[in-house]
Length: 354
Ligand SMILES: NC(=O)c1ccc[n+]([C@@H]2O[C@H](COP(=O)([O-])OP(=O)(O)OC[C@H]3O[C@@H](n4cnc5c(N)ncnc54)[C@H](OP(=O)(O)O)[C@@H]3O)[C@@H](O)[C@H]2O)c1
Image 1 (tube, rainbow, N blue to C red):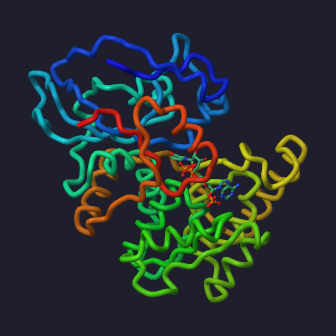
Image 2 (spheres, rainbow, N blue to C red):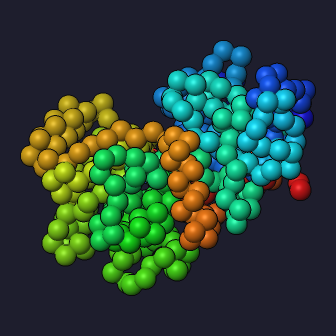
């Protein structure tokens, strides 16, 4: 079978397509899944570029974490799945043994997993759609439902950008009856998102947009759009450069789910991190102290949260936004496209042809 490995984090060209033996069942609760589709996350190209939280392990890594496919073999004690079932990988449990990094990833024609590491796919979704859910959607769900403070109808949620996490967060928030303020570098992108989420936007004031290039003081614009009030939730993907404004955007006891630090990578907010780090961290400390906002580090989601997310999507018949589908032998092009940031929602790679 074919699979992609990474031996050094020096760019997307380091992805190597190899022919290896198909996995075999080792334990009685193992399952072999024929992968039909995988989806990319920002962390995948961070890893190929050597800037992810985990280094490339000795002996290389089978890359990517999201996948959906068909169960083709089951161990003697597998009770949750049978041959022919459609399944998707669950979110990684913790950073240390993250699938696609230190644990074998999904960029492969077949994967060997424990039955605890997969879940049945939502029945109304295609393999391409199911493959988008584990990391980005799991993180969005955990951001809004993973704490004592959970999203309520009438809340306001700020979603940063128009990538995987942000678009899923917007869909989940709208489904819960909240108002969404989506920030973006592009008016065209947010209009595309508005079109895709159409059915969930029950009135125009439920989906408001903010161009972060035009409004440098995003917090003031959030408050203006929200009728003079700060927001209840914000999913922070920018990191240390954007966090001060994010803290000023949420109310006392409002929740900021800190999921990423993209502004460290892109440096689009001005001087490099090293030059401004003391000033930036001091700003964060002060803003946090005086605002009373809660900042919660949020990593993917657990199996139970993923089940809840599936149930909610089964009810609303929600379909994820897929920007583009690449073929398996175009994985590097798919990575380049994800890295460009030009996409909207998710990028998918078809693995099996049927
Ligand atoms: N904690 C977790 O478990 C977890 C899980 C998944 C992802 N993440 C992290 O979350 C972040 C987003 O992931 P993703 O997969 O959604 O990425 P993505 O699909 O690549 O989307 C990124 C989008 O964010 C916007 N953006 C880029 N730089 C920004 C900045 N400095 N300030 C505000 N917005 C910015 C851009 O949208 P516009 O062009 O519209 O502005 C860009 O298209 C990444 O840092 C990723 O590593 C964390």
